[in-house]
Length: 366
Image 1 (cartoon, rainbow, N blue to C red):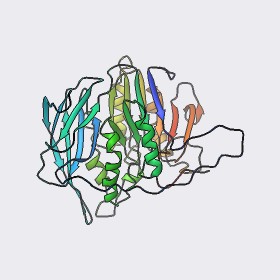
Image 2: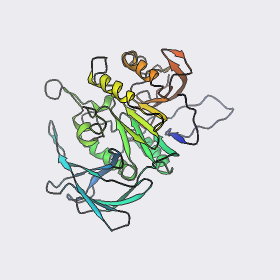
Image 3: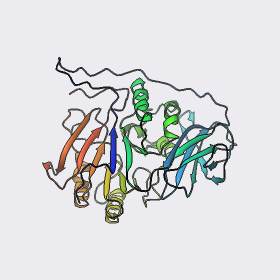
Image 4: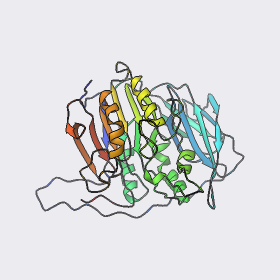
């Protein structure tokens, strides 16, 4: 099945700058901006770094962190401000990374919830009230897509643009905090995005800056990412938080992992094969894939880094008639025509690179 962009599904690509079309001299791309560090300004028992994500049909997962180790992993919620008709309990964990110790990381799955409905909620029985809106159950649906977000002044500008739109689901194809083993930056990032990530579901996949591996001590990496950003991998039959899928309003979204095994003998490949085989285009006519390292890229930055994954998995996406593939990693915006095996093909996906969210490294210039 081949779909064109229609009013049923709207995807917004947020660039951290305003591009003006004019007949003047060559456009000069802005330079990187300063890092923003958000300090903790609530009590130890109050929730911080609150974010929500989809967790199966009609369910959401509420995640937050507390410094106080005695706060219960509970969420109270309801459809009216200050009136919590329902509650749910979840799980919590913490982790150590060299000399850093995280706070208590809480994850609570709540539901079933009604579509297109605003819910008010409180985490751990104390602190401020938050609210989110559930996505619709049918078209139209609107996604915001931002890759390589970071936490700079450009990030803040991007988030302001996102916040000004009435979107339904936020999609992030890797490179979240750019902590790069500096764990307090994970906390700062959580506080920076909380005003947005607590009000709409944020669905993310990992990038290279989430790896944070260290020989012998942390050889597998992704310790902070997996602990903090729990995604619905179990709900989608995946054995790893690094790849998963979910359905929302007629759209099947597949989040792939560029930095875990993907060859034909890997768990990820076998999972993807089974996941695509179960897609019902009558229920989800749109199939969208997100990954970090792009398979097609004309920029000099990171040229060819996604090639081995493309060779391993591209045929699966082509045979399943995937509509669009979003990637990050390259700090630029680029959109290809429909492609398969390095050739224009009307049955292939549209490939879009959207890796210019606001990271500290700046834009890819060549």
